[in-house]
Length: 563
Image (cartoon, rainbow, N blue to C red; front, side, top):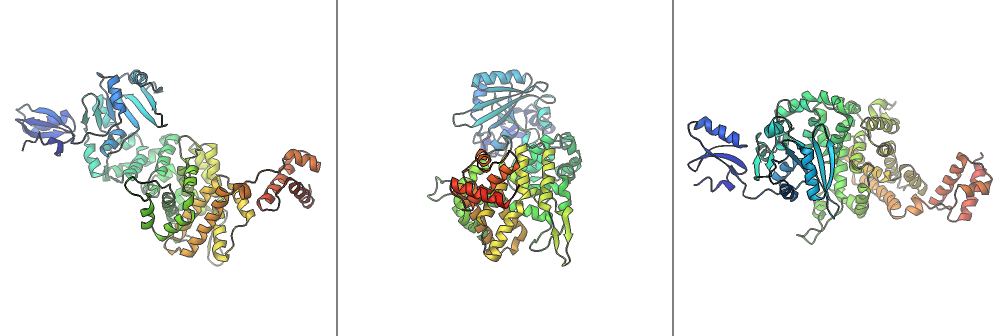
């Protein structure tokens, strides 16, 4: 068999081979590797070095052709995640390109040719960004940088993991893979490029965990050992880089598994020190786990809940909606969930599409809240006379602890405020659902009004976390009756917030502060706001519906609540 002719479908596809008399005698990830491998066995002969393209061309962004057209003679390589994604059959909108030198100048030329936006990222490191926007609103980011190290080989070896240390030559359409990253991709392995990769940049400890979860890969044993050794160096990394990697983990798949991995690797004392104390803290029934295992379980169930209530899409291959079979295969509790609150899928999507910060999602912030919702339990643990373990005020104190960590990560004020609301009020949902299940009593209109008055838009987050928290509390002991009571509570709260907010949650004001001052002969001060709030609550509970009724109610309220 002619191995060259069959090379497209052979194990050499995408690699460089050394050939003598039409026979392949060696191969490697680069031309030089193939040449050196051939010399070890046929040192007296001079082989022909050729590239063996894959049977199916890699699926790269069409922007690369335009970049090459703008720079036909320029030595330029696509590197990093975009290559990895292409080998995995994914298309990336973040393209990292490296050149020998003058990266900023080259990026400016590309931006001009593509009629795109141009930014200098770091003049001292010769890096720049080109942003290509399309009519449908999507954006592609092309980052240009000069080689780090001695040439392309040095640049690739200085990267984090072998699966990200592969290059694509835009000029001759060939792959250069000096560290055999493509083989690690096929084996689903995360492997550090060098022995010092993790110490050189400790943030890679978090990145390894994130990418292992994202691609369902395993981390190679030597790399895991290096990660443990590098964990103590995380304080040398800026809080912003720590935060960004952590929030990418929380945004990605299986955040509970990723956080478990970080704890096992010894990362918490250097990244999330407050969480170290959760492990081994016992809880009384109905809790079936200690505080740490409960936290992970709640996060796992939160991911399942968010997946179950995600918007359905019509599949081109079936008349049914995608997700219907998923619901059928899910457990009974997931099926009940979608029956009770599945009709709010689009509203949930709109909620999570809101942004408190352009760089981070509400979804990731909710998982951060889930991670910290019981952070104060170790500090507030007590045992009553009956031997029952209590955690008085853990919600109030936990909100403050989480806010401190959020400030250390330089989260925005809006994010910190939402985080505090979620943690401070997370027990209220359980109070409602417990009464619903134990006494058959629904939350009153006043209770619903006050819940959303205090929670605002965070009320939706509180409902979803409450459901996940319940499942993470009771685990296999959760009964259908208890779950149904919680779902009925969730449906009632969401129904009021999403379907009739003007009736119960945020009734329109019938009078304002000037009316209060004029009608009751009051002076400016806090009392004005208290009167208005009392009237608004009366509206929410159905006691007041007109301006005249509002004024009369305010008059009576002032009699009962003297200055």
